[in-house]
Image (cartoon, rainbow, N blue to C red; front, side, top):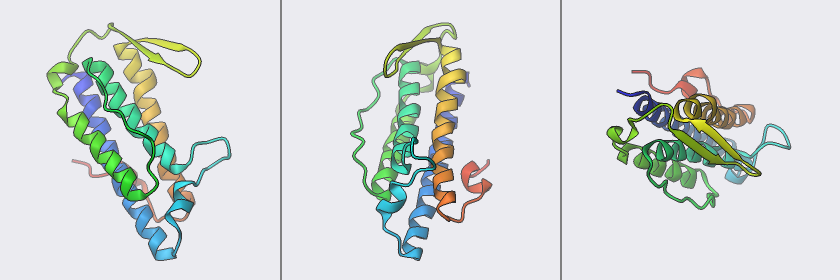
Length: 167
């Protein structure tokens, strides 16, 4: 397996774990009589994204990274999820896209250029630096923040929930 197919596998594993974390979040909300929207809009700090956007960005980081590495188009998603079920559908669609990208398309030169259009400017990377300095750290930042928002809201989560099934 190549570095990039392993990256794809890591994203899939992280998204499957995030899906399970969301399932626990929804179950906890129902048990406590909380509205889903209260958790979906919860933030750790005022200047941070709410839970639903943390999940959206996690999916976007994974799908765009694999699309860039495979030189294919990432599926568009509207960022209009307003329920746990819709976020879980987004995760499922992202995982399906990742699985649809053949590992052979991910093989390539570690030095090939990757450009990311950020808000105000372009970021230029080699493929290797893109994966290690941008894609993976951003993916885990947002999945961890989603976990932390739910944990902070009292959802009974632990390290094993974040790590997911270890094989």
